[in-house]
Amino acid sequence: MPSTELTHSYEIDAPPAALLAHLAEPQNYIGLSPLLAEVRDMRHEDGVTHYVAVERFRILGLVNHDNVIRVTLHAEDARLPAEAAVHGQVVSPGGVRMAYRFAFTAHPAGGSQVLDTLHLHTPPGLLRYAATKAAAVQAERARVLAHRLRRDT
Image (cartoon, rainbow, N blue to C red; front, top):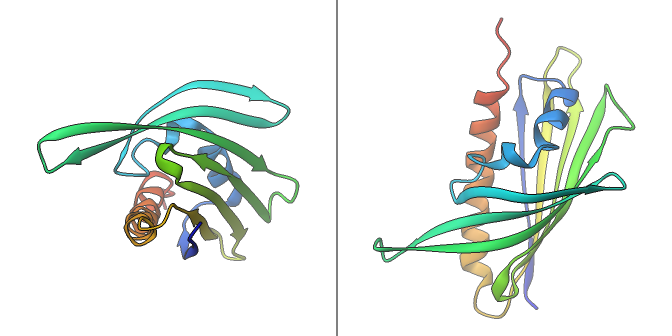
């Protein structure tokens, strides 16, 4: 199965604890990806959150297609206040799989450095398309998180 890793690093004017709290809640992912339209069926067990997310695609600009994906989310807070992370897996119909990790490290002057890492695995012929979409989502996620978590100074 073809695979690739995508990384995007950026700064957010919020401490790791604020990033962890925001990204540990599945509902907060709506809007972090322009495709994500719905989050439902959340289950919490042993520090892991399982849920279903719906990605909405427009096909040829005419028809909506809902891609129902299963997501597993883990939040790591053992190193707060200096570091935290959220990671998990996404299983999508059609054989697309993704492991993700958001690692947050505090800056001495405030705010956090975010390392957003995605590991994509796709059936043959889909990797370039999936990687292009995922890279665009990473860039948009950085912008949306910066806006949502901006501290008033």
